[in-house]
Image 1 (cartoon, rainbow, N blue to C red):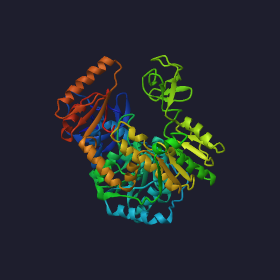
Image 2 (tube, rainbow, N blue to C red; image 1 turned 90 degrees about the horizontal axis):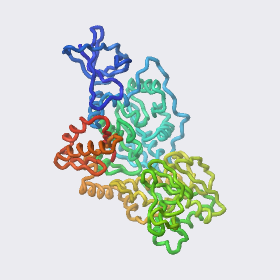
Image 3 (cartoon, rainbow, N blue to C red; image 1 turned 60 degrees about the vertical axis):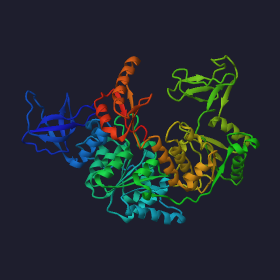
Length: 601
């Protein structure tokens, strides 16, 4: 008997299984974990299938032993094989990333939850919580709007309370979110896998979860394949967050897409939670399955262009300054959002208009008072005294960064305390009068369980995402707007938004489905995802000429296929009717070609 085995190793995409001889003393089945000799050592493998024929002239190594207690069901292994084929990875690589290495030692489940957090919501919102939880029990799939993790957890808790026999997986975008949700749902005794545990701890948790017929698993994308065929419900928290996608290394997976494919394959309930749906959600779940939260918090919109003539500063206009002053006079605390570090947006010559970029790679730089830091390669240069183009000494700071805004706030509010929070500065003092923050605050410090941290939230650069050269710019602007709205709502704070596009944000606030429908129509018109299949390809090759020749050859192969287009930065745009033809070409590429099927999700 011959066993085809997937070794649990990172393998090139063109590598499939390896054949091993099975002695009569061993009884194997598809999906079993086995110990096999591999090169000069041993490793764990998963049995693909068994066959009778003997290969002539090839001496096969023997399967050493069966690892008892763990086995993938046939449909589960088939699902992983399908996903591997879709993202152009070997099944071995995906299995290696999906599951911890089996251990012969038993370990107790690690308790990653420090202490439970009381899960309460204002009484005025209880009917909304019940309505949305009941809607989950009546549907198989859907999108549910929730403005923060506290509301999200409350809806899930009501669902779990009403359906105690469910086996549920909650997928979070990062470790911090998983910890917060686990604390809120501690009464349901959840398993928690974030990737920070040791291999043996993860393996023990995986085994325990597979044995249970009901229960709760809270995880990040590292545990997406812990979902087994007995899982009844998958919940994706903060579904619009980009951390659900792996861009840095193979296998490049989008955990949301895998959750959706899993739901379709196993008829599992699937629910996405976020502050606002995306166009993809409108298509995936249909309008009747998109459930909205009641949003009755008042928002004050400020149009800077109308107050420019009466305001001392363009970045923070007079009516915004007045609202901040009133809050401080009432002994309240203010959160100001400016998602731009440094001193200014750019440095330019006032004489010829030359814009300074990185001296090493030519990318944009972050401008501080004394230095320029490349946002691409990290090169640090001093602020130049003269323009390299015209030799003029008229060097100007253009736009505002957090450093420049601090100077303005100190002049406007000289008696108040001010702190800056960004990716490098994470020491938050809740007693400070004014907190100036980037998105790092909502990602690293915002605690949805705490009330009244701020009495006023000011979003200064709401329009900034709209200028991104990306077809998702409007979608991203609405998500950021709603996230800060959720923070203000959780703190019962005033929400002030400086924007030139008030109509845009108001329509997303009051008619989100209509706005998504219009965005869907635009995407269809210009054949953008999800109406077209986009794949980004990069080549690891140090010799520039060799790299160009290989990419040009691949471009010619792809563009021979009707309607397939390849952009200058090698994004392959494929109509859905031509996917199989393109996949056949890409599947034969060696691993020097980095294929990202989720680059635009």
